[in-house]
Amino acid sequence: MTSLDRRSVLRVAASAVATGALGSGCAPAGTDSPAVRTPGAPRSGRPSAPDSARPGGVPSAPAHAARPPTRVPGMPVQIEHGPRDGHAVALTFHGRGDPRTATALLDEAERAGARVTVLAIGDWLDEQPAMARRILDGGHELGNHTMHHRNICALPADAAYAEISRCAERLRTLTGTIGSWFRPSQAQRATDLVTRLARKAGYPHVLSYDVDSLDASDPGAPAVRRTVLDRVRPGSIVSLHLGHAGTVAALPPILDGLHRRGLRAVTTTELVT
Image (tube, rainbow, N blue to C red; front, side, top):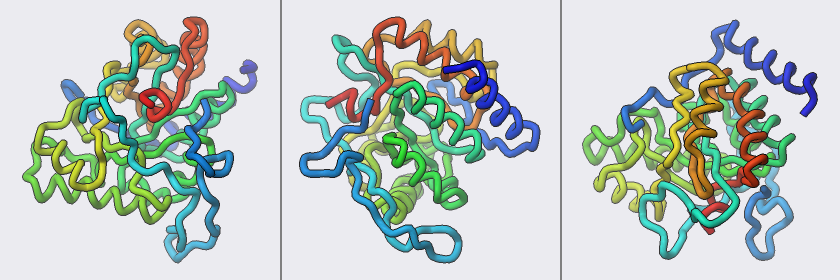
């Protein structure tokens, strides 16, 4: 990446901060490559769909379809990391924030040949429906991070299920499937109840992580880079956020550091299958 590219990305992120446009991803909780192809699918792994849209910006037919929920025989219901004997890691992003910042981050990942997993919040998809198409068109993976990003593990069963199922329906409307993964909001691990509700909604696994970048507290790009590179190992699943300028600035050195260690950033499905 050239210094001009890097300055351009930083200017986009800084502009979003200056205008107050960035929304936070996850509130900090205390514990808080190419896409995989399906046989017979086109090279992108996702069928095309019409571009027409209903009033309000929601497509009248699915956009490029996301992968359906990933099922990995032999893996636990709650997945914290992938195989430790490989050469890949998964960078996973909690999906909320200004679309300019999110797009800058996706552009940066694509320039480096990286693919990421975005766990989108349903009300963000309502506000920014075009981001679902942008994520998938970049070869990335899309999943469910609840409808309103409430503390799902503290909710009663009916409210928790509504958080999961309503976001799943948003994803289905926009992409044709409920997405590849479910991750609980404001928690690193799901309770047994939330795990059962996620399976009821159609997700065989709950996606956790073993590396928390701590970027949601906005410690600055150097701190985010150090935290990730100090803790990452082969097979790691890293938790990051789209809506933070420091994360955009930290991504290029994180990807450089992974490359120097012989590690690739791939989608979570590619990591575990």
